[in-house]
Image (tube, rainbow, N blue to C red):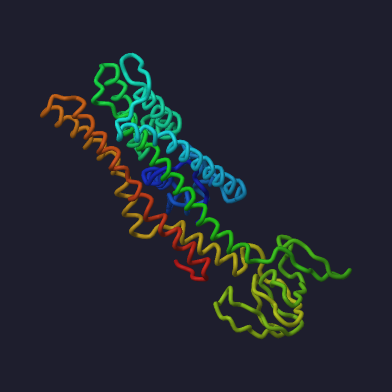
Length: 402
């Protein structure tokens, strides 16, 4: 069995992660698949005799998402940074445009002039809310359309239907001359707040990723290799098992190895938490990223790259973030069936209200309220985000949680 870990870009809610997880589990040869929304990561155990990693990626891509593998770590980092900048820009603009619509409605403010029998303030509300809902919130509508084509639903479906309902009904009321039933600010404020939430989510993911990066940065960047021609400094990536390395006082041990000459004290606090230096003599083991304090040491490299203790620690923390806790699996299961149930309840609510009142405006609003309030952001994101941030912050403080 082989394990593949890759990043899935474009997931917005727990329903997205559940859908991708189900698609992967259905593939012949896959024994385990776990898709975690918070870090946007999929971890799959599969039989390479039956299926390839490329086929795993294809199953996710068919669902309308983008796949980035571990090989493109720098591209992943850039993608996360782009997502953070874009979500921040969208959130700021959306709040800046939605605020005036809310203020005008709450204060019943009017502006000089009128057009087609309506005060200018109403047209300003219509224009600003249309920009927020249709332009800044376009990803929600595209996401909903994709899910409709795939005969499924996710949180984008709820957001899109809720905000578009408020906008379309307000335009309909405007055309009918019904000034009492305009809800431009409702759709605009909802879209703005959700876009702000998206920015917070992206920022949280970035902070958790930085915790892992800081762990990786603990290691040395170069090593001093001993050759027949003398000693020279090389990048840490070029050190091979069996190379003889010289570590001078004050320098970090570049890789895991064994002392072949010299005596010194090593600060291993980053590894063990013990502040007292540890004496090292010939044939003693030393570990990458620990600090040589007193004497020069000649060591033979025994583990390099992903095999070092530091790399294993980073991998354990990453695994703890990617793998799902039992409570998270339960949350994802609920979120997966949550969206269609909410849509059905909203339609039933509209039907009942219309039957009782005969007023379409009065009937649509409770239905829209259900769609908007029921968005499972907290349910689908709070649990994985708490786990991811918790393990990341623990790792920064030297506490490994698994």
